[in-house]
Image 1 (cartoon, rainbow, N blue to C red):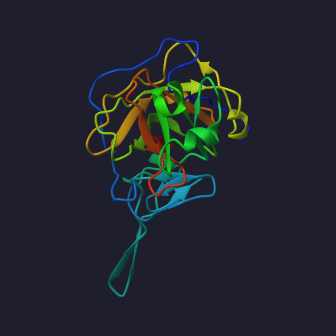
Image 2 (image 1 turned 30 degrees about the vertical axis):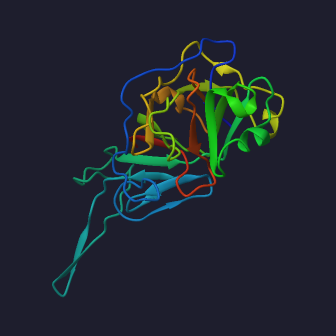
Length: 267
């Protein structure tokens, strides 16, 4: 992953004003079905080695094309259709060279949380249920410390894709409906090991996405990020920030429904 795009999840920005916000959280995602998290497009879906989930009749470079051309041949009166979508060759109408819609779903390779006054991701993980990481403006179990959450997505392959939408989607803990969802920041690159004793710096003067509202009863929370958050990037680093003392826990990368970075566009 030569190019690096930085995005941040931070609970309570360090050295910056704490953020919290209102509004209604949106849940679900277009083309997403199933209890194990959203899949999209037509046809079967799966995951590649880089953490990108592809869906549709045919995938190229980890990308999912959702429209394609069909060809038919006659043999003893029978017709067979090829539903493969080739983004750079044909459209659903059969026009050569017309861009095709694609959707890519990436899951993080790292999720973690740390207390700002004593960064230790292992200690922070012990303060919530297994399979979760948290963000809190005042964590009593850590002496009232501000806690930030972080995510690292790698293996992005957006070569030739005109990005249209970017959505971060996460599933909250069943005990957290009504909690503040938090704002999403871009942060400097980090590793899990590097979070021991170190807090990734936030990038830019404002968050990539404000809090979409309180955690809904359905528990799925979505943030709409700008296309610039992933363009020309192979790695994305995000931080979750909240000023609320009513923190929230989200599923981590080890669960059946991990966080998802969903990119749609044309190729």
